[in-house]
Image (cartoon, rainbow, N blue to C red; front, side, top):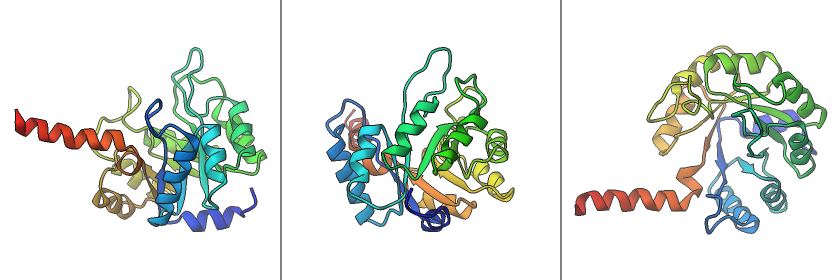
Length: 229
């Protein structure tokens, strides 16, 4: 990582992080197209990027100097953890240009302990982003050394709240306890992003509403079909 930790954090502070993760198997699921999406969001003012897969990360790193949160998603035996689940994933992300490595930091059974992953990411010279689903998980990840905590998985574990929009309560509680929290998950409008920042978010990540064109199109089509029926 060529940029200093303090410079990366200052660059991200109070800004928009664009999650450029295409629908897998969809028409935009090509590394060069993901790189184009990343450049387009940068042109719109995004201060950072969240990129999944080694191939996409490598392509995006080649076209931008923005801080990148890198991750991989894959299933592992005997665990529901699928965001950067193992140590080999950390090394792969770091060597392809991630400034920040994100991983699932939920309390579910896991192949590698959170503390071990935190140490591995820091050993690669990268910052840690812990993707959590509850306040308690976020506080524990922070205690274990995570530099950033995301509300990413709130609503996606069996024990976290099911909300229609972002978990602003989790953002507010974590921020109030001194945690750099990245608001992420179900942020679909500029107004929701604004509210997340007002709740104390260090930065705000938006994905589907920016880059998943198939899902955005379907939402419009579904609305029109309701009227037509």
